[in-house]
Amino acid sequence: MENAIYKRIEDYMLSCMSDTAHDKDHVYRVLYNALAIADTKAKVDKDVLIAACLLHDIGRKEQFEDPELDHAEVGADKAYKYLIGIGTGEEFAAAVKSCILTHRFRKERPPESIEAKILFDADKLDVTGAMGIARTLVYKGGVGEPLYSIDGDGVPTTGEFDKAPSFFREYHFKLKNLYDRFYTDKGREIARSRRAAAEKFYNDLYAEVVETYAMKKSLNIKP
Image 1 (cartoon, rainbow, N blue to C red):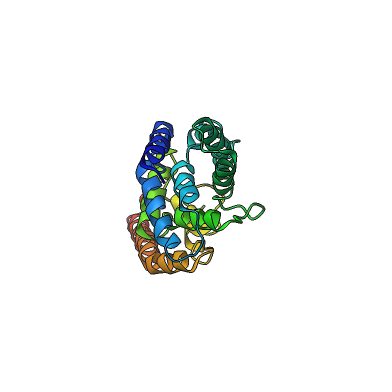
Image 2 (image 1 turned 90 degrees about the horizontal axis):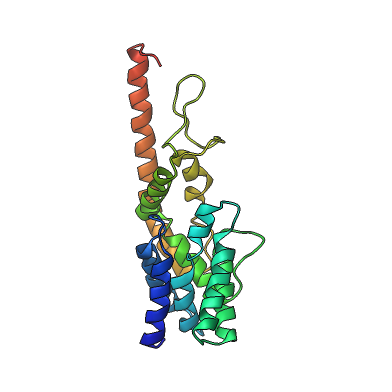
């Protein structure tokens, strides 16, 4: 990709980013992961891939303001219009739009092109391992959700069967189930190398919480 085009797309991305868990550094990590995966594949349009990586989360602000919106849909439309506006051509803009539209976990809308599959994997890699734990905690704190829930007996739940949102619930609902949901061998390989770090963090944190609440019980403290 020509430096001038890259810079224009990057500047537009930077103007759209305001979410701490989905910030510019997340975008750059996705881009670097994607290019590493692309190097293991043949016939990847790296210009499409780079543009899609840079622009994949530009719809986050709209989704945050209106949770009924899907940031992938919003971002895909914004990216298409922007790219058409700077003269990249309809075919290029449409290819980038398709990648962005399918980068979320949606069974009814899986990625189809190799560029879309690489973006999907690169984005999901940033939810694995220690980075995935850190980003989830930042996001949960930002929206005011707790680390864990307490059951009717005053005992911390694992989160596995909770309905109320929390970090523990998110771990069981999403984080621990990521590792076999990759489209590329390289993405799957990187993800699995990070899995133990995430599992250890959750298990250690849960053990510490349970231990602390056991102390409370022994002291007969209420609530």
